[in-house]
Image 1 (tube, each protein chain N blue to C red):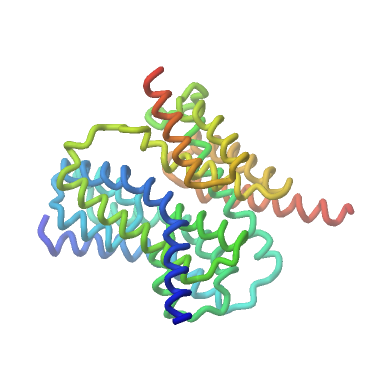
Image 2 (tube, rainbow over the protein chains, first blue to last red; image 1 turned 45 degrees about the vertical axis):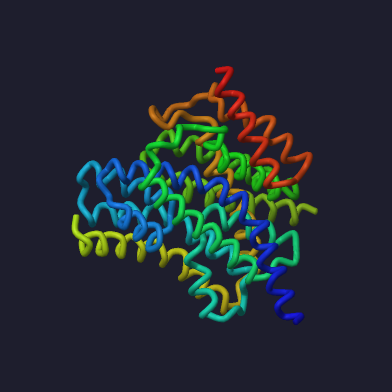
Length: 233
Length: 107
């Protein structure tokens, strides 16, 4: 009786954390489906891609590259480069999932995206967030993504572009998650550094290395500043 | 493309996406992490969010040049204030969408 109650509560709390992600994923997933359909991918290929890859930006790039008749190895290589940033997220999540069974981690790792990472990290830090709630959040976001991309490939051309400002959903979410992370002067400094470095890096170096490059630089400088501040006290 | 060609492509993409997500977690979750690594990793979320967000607000992706006049940036200001005041993720998303929709009408 108690066990089912806790399960239900975990499901409810996981869903409450996931809905802003789902709201953001839906229009982007639709857009991806439409583009994929225009590039000649059948709906079942979109379904396969969303299940097997589950990485928004890489899937957009894949569709664009397929439309440009790029080779399979070059698409896989690009995907690898774009998704390398998850190494950092996966490492940061390990702090909160220390000692958890490998079986759980193997399933959990599948759902690590920019959005689920940011939401789960905030919850882990601020509340008594459990790994099951985090897993539910991951999988609800995943289910929404699969549903949205396939829907897009089937009926997407009938959806009006930019309806209800929905294109801003993920940006709004990132802004709020960033605010949640600002819990001290060192975090604000690190965030500002990351913004300046990523914009400069983005302007000067082609490709997507600015995400990993700028976040590692900013975190390192922030860490060194914190050390100096501690010593000088 | 045939089913098998898609299977090969998405299988490869899936593998190079999954491994960076899984290996650090599988390795680090069963190891005693040094304190400096924990401290460094605690700054990673704010750094990644900022690094993802800043170019989308301050630059034009088509020309890859600085652009301080984007509606995304303008809308980010009330959205940020709302987020600081309410600390509600869902409501902030909706408020951001509303302002972006308004910006679309007036610009």
